[in-house]
Length: 268
Image (cartoon, rainbow, N blue to C red; front, side, top):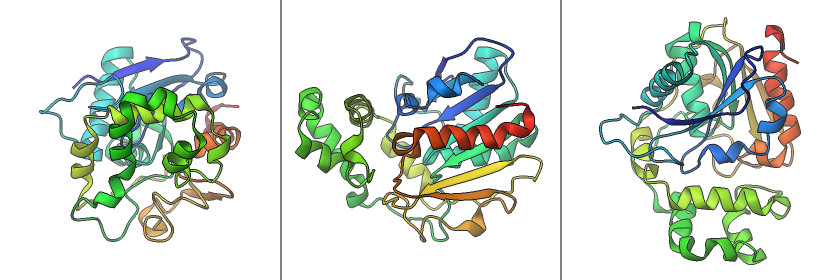
């Protein structure tokens, strides 16, 4: 399946960086960090199947490894790019790790922003309580543009996602709510994660940084942040006053860590 992508920097002197969003999200989630990253990278954002502008494809396998292969194929066919840096949030972070384990010669560095898949005991079924944000976005979709201007609705939608929810811009909230409410691939991607965890090996030749917020309620410590499942050579970093989307709560620090992870390759 060919995914919808967006290229934010055409200067071939800059190395490519692929950004992969999480479950129920879209490429728009990375808006707060793209301008700064584009000073050093050709930034390519990807919409996963049934997310953002990418349609649902019933033939597309939705497990993280298969989604990684779809990204490899799309980026090569669309841009002729075979090797790149990759950073991903939540499910996107899991996909990034799978890509590095699957085809390490094609991945320069990996930065996992609160990556999923690092749990010892995988879930065996959907829990309705974990889909509250999805159902809320679906119900409020007709009025979301106006409704998000109300502080009460923002609190309901974002207080568990970010300890800095009151500081999030209207654009961040609207983009994420719109993406969630229109994510036809939400449950197919969720079902493909059931019974799975990240347990592949990433060779030491691929630098890996993993970043979690200290108040991540989506993938909380310790049950969803099992360090023994991460690459042994990775840099494991915890940021204070940060939730599940570091690129929202601490965009400058997120950019800094992506650059630091890539510094050995002439970046920054």
